[in-house]
Image 1 (cartoon, rainbow, N blue to C red):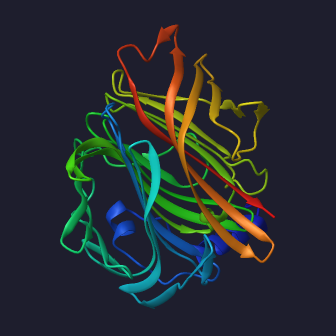
Image 2 (cartoon, rainbow, N blue to C red):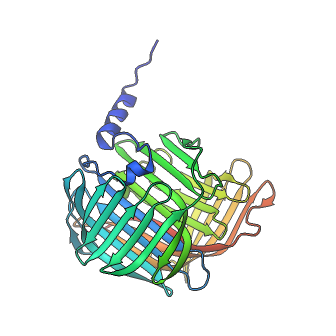
Image 3 (tube, rainbow, N blue to C red):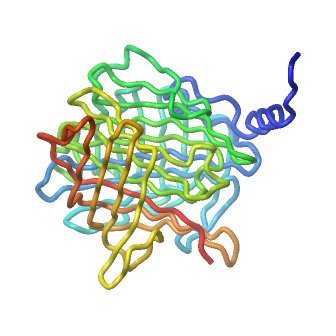
Length: 374
């Protein structure tokens, strides 16, 4: 006899109303602008981190379309869905260069999305674009005739396709490139009345940045839903051999899509993924004892992890720079989206009594801490 579950039916209806089905491919995610459902937001995001240890650079780009107009860093931004190919929204770009974080763009922009073409023009005259197909996307930022950056995502192909991520219960298709040098996923998460879907590519990029050759890690993400206004923490450690450490934690017991912790190490040497299901994260600073709360006085991140099969991880990272996107949600409520540039001081990862970092060097790395405040 079939046991009818009203809650499951309600959850499915809410998910379909809010974000519809998960994207089948990343090209579908990047090159589509379906009209947003009520109270939903959407964004395109990418981050480039230098493998070079000599004065390394980082560049972050975000195109963010809110469900309504909003105030960000004390400036009002217009979010307007024009038709199935165009919209107006916010565009932000910052750089880490010469040991400092600097804003390049903090503008309204007009965007056009067609098959194989994503293009935005900001009010100050910058042109941002994505072209080509998964996983070999071309991305560039121009200021008039001057090139800020131009590069291509590079990896071996993904000939084995996608499969369901065994570590999560929600729909999350994942895949690895043939040589394990890139990772991609398409997910649709849901918890209570919160839903979102996102598509990610973690890879390597090669091109030019700030008038010099650039070779580094690359993270591209496209998301639709409520996910851009949830508290979260992220640490992404880059390695010179293109291995990757990824940690994301939703501290809220309610707003976490049912899977609060995502903590993995992809080792290109063994071509194996190691998963950690226990963790602690703390911040410290000069004259500041360990705390889970991010703030202006912290200068070091401490992370530990344990896996089911005896895997252990310990990380200490120095904060080299920080960038804040502060959204005004209500007159007295702020959403603080902190992005941090990290230098890994100490890292140890063990599995099966083996040092997984043998022969590896960490490179310029990245973190996030997002939370509400009054």
